[in-house]
Image (cartoon, rainbow, N blue to C red; front, side):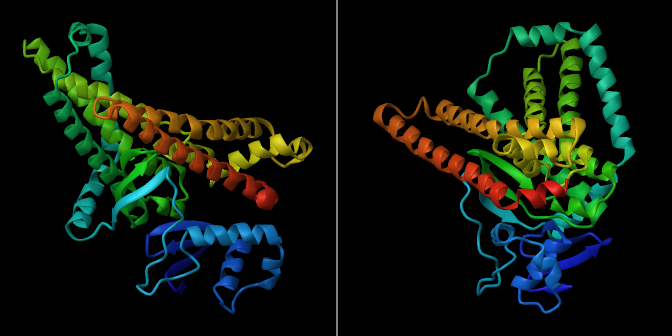
Amino acid sequence: MIIDNLDIKKYDDDFYMINNMSTNKYIKLGIKEFNYLLLIKGEKTYDINQCNHLSKEQKEILLSKFEDWGFTYVERNNKFQKKRMDFSNVNIISFEPSGRLYKILNQMKRIVSPITLIFILGQSIICGWIFVYKPNGIIYAISNIELSVSTTLILYVMNVITGILHELAHATACLKYTSKVGKMGIKLFYLYPSLYTYVSSTYLVRERRKQLVIASSGLCVNVILGMSSLIGYIVAFELEINIMILFYYFVLSIGSILYNLLPFIKLDGYWILKAFCRIDNLYDKSIILFLQLIYDFKGFCKNNIVGKKKFFMTFYGGVNLLFHLIFWSYSIRYVYLIFNDYVMGYLMIIVFLILGIIVMINSVKFLRKYNNIYKKDSKRILSSI
């Protein structure tokens, strides 16, 4: 079924997959939510009984989400209106893979196989052997770290290339298992320039293994390149050739892997955790559960979530709220380190005053968003866990 810019498919008897063809982003909706979407789109095929199961507050929340997803209105140029500004996630450039890039991704699908996993395992064994039996090269590198301007620039270029390969890996895995790839591009993620790939089509995949492959494929690129650089450095060191930049790149890769594994913001670590837990919208649902603990302890004790699952989701939701502020603080420090040598005096004060206002506005919006969702829609959300 196609309505305006929405491609709609029904899966089983309990949910629908909505593809916004403008952004190639996928959203999973339950039966009640889908029928309410039909109602506000003016379609005559909606089930009024399903819509009546939603309260007025729930409908307000859904309408807001439909607007954010670009479901409810179209501009003259047939492109959906932009989302309300979110300073923690500012899109700079976006494009849909097509033409030559799409052909490259199709060719790369062969790499997404058990052979790659075996290769990573082999590299891991070699690196483990290096740390145990050939530590001299590593000790030497750690004792003689010296980053010149030219080395820093080379590492930066290597990191950008790695980021591109990282996102291509996500797109390749997504194309292999869903036959679809979302938009790719560059954005400011908490002020950090970041590459991204929309892989929301993973909702089309029911198998946990395939979801994990899509979520972790980018990290596999970092692991392969990082361990290859360490092996290359040690081989050169044994031949009395000092290629320190390979060791620096290995350390940079470790940092990038740890960063991407953070599950408290929507990086690779979150999507891996979500696939393990098999809970759609784990991030939002965990925050709502934590807010129920704060606002309604009796309701929290009586809800249908029990045992370790309740403890994990509540703890995870609380950390998510806290980490939003922590990540902003690290972002401000990142900006400070960049501009400290170039911006002085009152100008630096003005820069940080502007950043402080941005962080305050974003944090208030973030907390208000989940507070409103909790007050208006927590019953429906928690009952779906």
